[in-house]
Image (tube, rainbow, N blue to C red; front, top):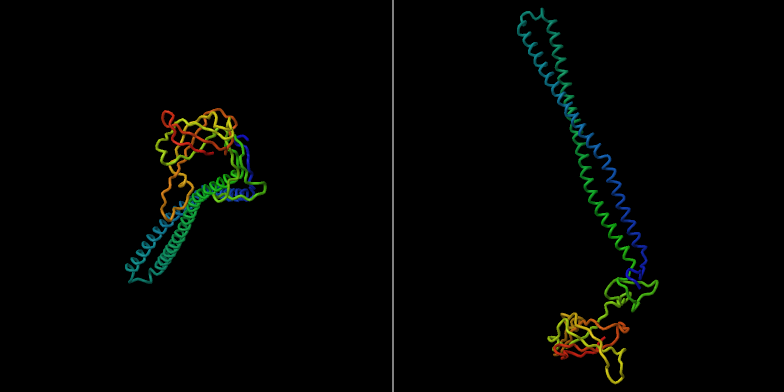
Length: 311
């Protein structure tokens, strides 16, 4: 098989539905944002104009009310003065007095009317300010919708990533060594279940040997290794000519710790083994994953640290 070749197709129905739901939510929020962005500038401008207009009208009404109040005071003072000046000849000035009293009543009525108009205009100004606050709240709602839209977009991307993972592709050019799934099988992505496929990369073959912990101190990365593979023995009486490799990694833990064995109730001294990874430097005669081999790690001047039969 080739790298990126599709190996497994998982049924994507649920994930496709999840993508569609997330996209629908994001689209609905986007529509609300678009509508608000279209109407909000006009609504804000209209509200501000209404406030300015109501403020100007209120100032005009208050000015008219102050003039009416002054006129009323002047007229009342004039009437009082006439009464004081002509108190003795009240009958002679009765007609003039009635005229002044009528003017005073008109001035008072005008003052009351102006005050009522000022009160009404203040109410209109309060309403205009309330409308402006409502428009500004819609501006805040637009910010909230922007945040929700970003969250919805992230959910869409998450759902799309999940959907993309329904296609499992080969990470390398290699060979399927083991298949644990059949078409229509139910799979679960947890450690308790076996892998779906085991893929071998022919370009990265290696040998894993287990070295006794008493010998591991003499092993170094880069040491030469002689290798005998059972499948390629040249003689039934001996191991024949070895292949060659070198140590590329020494595991930091022992194999017992890797396997997760539970601690023993009673302590028993037992020597452990340390996994060592060995590269293959010799030309490939047809190696296959899982073949048994014996290795001899050369520590100095041909001395062996450990001869181990492994795979």
